[in-house]
Length: 325
Image 1 (cartoon, rainbow, N blue to C red):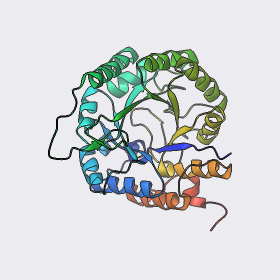
Image 2: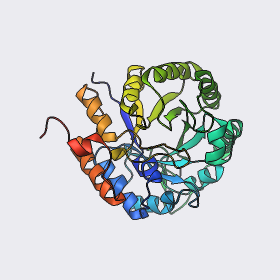
Image 3: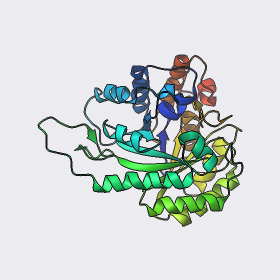
């Protein structure tokens, strides 16, 4: 089982956004660097949301500016910015993010609470962003190098690549159960817009492995050309089991958060994500390739625990790996 699995590190965004501690942009940039040193090659670095609603994510531009001092652009590394709407997307374009992840919801209830839009309005918002991308003029020539963007392609001024994440795929704190057909219909609509990667998120941690399999199969039929990514929370201790089910169903891209920190401030009871180091341990023990340095991840998890003022909840940050070096 030498099959590679890509783990998108979401700790600097989804991890920190639900913590009580508010870290300065320089500290958040340091976290990104530490995670990249531990092997992260796709990393959700910032969120372009209003600081009034998510103060933990204030200063996204400052974080990206700090990271720009990190040396030359590396083609193998991609930094992602999350956006909720067109205004956030425009902000992201003013920075050196490599990817933009558009947050959406599988339900009207969560969409209205999280970003003030129902499902149909969110699809229209995504369509408008994609139309604007298609109609945007090429960047003007400049004697001054423009920020490097474009999903790691190294082209100055190129538009970042785009993905979409659907929240509350397996359950909504406001609308209750979410049917497979409801998710598949929305995935199909997004796939028809030409989005290359669609993430399915268990925002409140209610999924089980069998439900994951059913939803993945339905989503794949609905958008056969899109890459599917999975995002799990360990709220009810099923996160790793759900990740296993996704891998068994053929998924090659999973989100995880260092230390298992985080959650969603707009979803009551949505505690931490599955921990990157726990997921890496499980996959690599089985022979899958992740490209991460497990010891460096554990060290980073303990470090961020100190920064947020509480021990990271991940199992490996307490127990360490096995066998011990």
